[in-house]
Image (cartoon, rainbow over all chains, first blue to last red; front, side, top):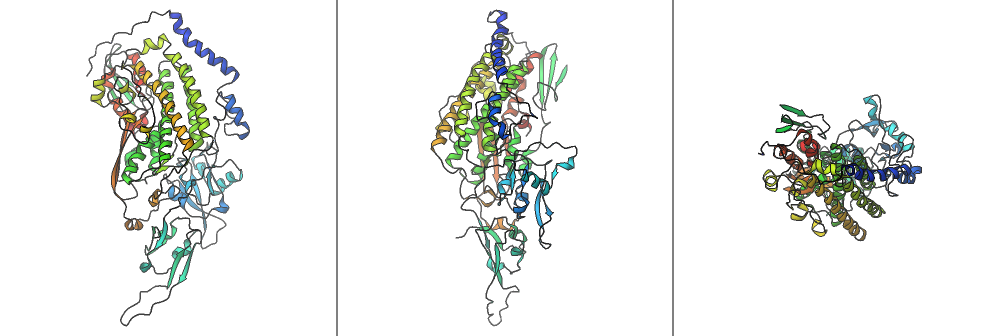
Amino acid sequence: MATAEAAPPPKSSGENPILYVAKPLATAARQFMKSLIRPSTIVYPFERLEDPAFRDKVAVAAGKPIGVGHVWDNYRGVHALNIATCISCNLCAFSCPDLCIDMVTVPGGDPKHPKKCPQIDYGKCSYCGFCSDACPEGCLTMTTKYELATPKRSEMVYSPQKMNEIFERKLPMNPIRVERPSNEDAILLDVPLCIGCNACARDCPTQCITMLDIPKPTPKPGEKLPKRIWKEPVINDSDCVRCGTCISVCPKECLFWGTHT
Amino acid sequence: MWVNMGPQHPMTHGLWNLRVKIDGELIVDVDPEVGYLHRGIEKISEDRHYNEIITLMDRCCYVAGIAWEHVYIGAAENALHITAPERAQWLRVMCDELQRLASHIMWYAAFVQDLGLMSPFLYGMRDRDLILDLFQSFTGGRLTYEYNRVGGVRNDVPSGFTDRCRKVMDWLMDRFVEYDRLCLGSEIFRRRCDGLGVLKAKECVDLGVTGPMLRSAGVARDLRKDRPYAVYDRVEFDVAKADAADVTARYLVRMEEMRQSVRIVRQTLDWLDHHPGPVLADHLPRWLGAPYAPMGNEGYLLKRNFPRGTGFAAVEEPHGEAQAYVVNTGGEHPYRTKFRSPVFVNLSAAKHYMIGYRVADIPPIMGSVDICVGEVDR
């Protein structure tokens, strides 16, 4: 451990003390003169960085190299939701690391299968954008809206309708879409386990599962046929959004992720 | 007499407490207390999917988010036996260096404010904003980027980005001259900082101090050179170092590092211009595919034979050497993660570079350590 003895004071360079102040002040004065012509700040509530009409003006006014300083369209702000194209696939809620997305019923679905759209609690949201990346239909996107202050905490919960209003305002949407990988896993069927119960086809948000009849085998003498409906799900891979709803509703766990070989 | 400097004190830059034993004006003993900002990131990580931990890493250090993403991603990719495409590695190097610039400029702004200089603080914050604008143009976030993914990065940089970035780099190089003129050219600054907070090379090595503090003591230790990760073995740069081991030396090292970072960023931009390609690896496990939600049904996991392993990565973060360790036991979540924060070690060595100086010297010395409490406590 170091000993507690006072360190010697640093030596002076023998400069004229007036220069102590004058030299840095010369630099600061130059910046000050520049800022008189092009101030580095903007008048926030009246001028906004994300305003498209204002962009080039901001960049010049803020003393920045042109084309750099503004809020870009891919800013991750409050979500916009297009209820009309939402397919209730649950992927946004599954992908949320903070568990701030609830799927709530919105009017418009049929009574047996109510339409469910995301409701986001912005008190918990971390704006990571995983939900809009996961959205297969592109109906949940993030906008440049960032002002969220409310008098009540309960108003931080945005219902689907409220996010639909933001969508109708036509704010700039995040232009960067994450491409689905070409070699994605598909949902495969473990044929001997299937009982043909139709649960997967019933709950599929894209209706890409059809139940096809399969021939009922003729039992050999003494053999007992399994109790089941003689149907089997066939999944249309090009329509499938890989949400996995069918896997989670399957009572026999006979659907699983895999690659077609 | 023991004096508490913190948890709320202008010197502390975050929530921590420096207990100082003084005899008149002389510092006799110090005792740094941390833990006020502990969020249990390592424990939360055990319950999250591999990609979801990235959101925690951004909040680990709030001025060097993307560097911490790189630390974790390196370890996670090792544990999952995934290699990122070449272009993603170059993008990561570019992000690391831009982040180093942003972090060092933020350090400069905060450090000179500790000394009582207000104008350089404003200049620093203004210039850092340009780098945040650049980050936002391709990641979408200004502070929490969520840009890396296991197996690559989320998206490619948009067209026109490299030209904008070059403009900012040119602009910054001019600003560095101004920074030096304001600080090094000022006799007041030199008298305030010369010979303060000396921590010699041997003590640095004994205590595990890394980063600019170690390099300011004359040890040219830099993971980017000594243990190259990503594509650092393919870019040209020099390791900044100084010999005096005091506060001024740390200032010099960081300023030189910023110039070297600009040099690296320019090389990566040239490479990115001429080598288009994919930024995300193929054949990722199901729950790591970029746009996908992981599924909660454990049944299908049993049907997949997924490689297990442990991963380790060390990255030269703006503050020093950050390390991560990830244990993968074949599930969706890591079994255990461990992060080594450089600032925690640098801060713990406070007894060795604080004793013997005056009370008024505490802000410059602590400022020169570049403390980020977010990553000290994790």
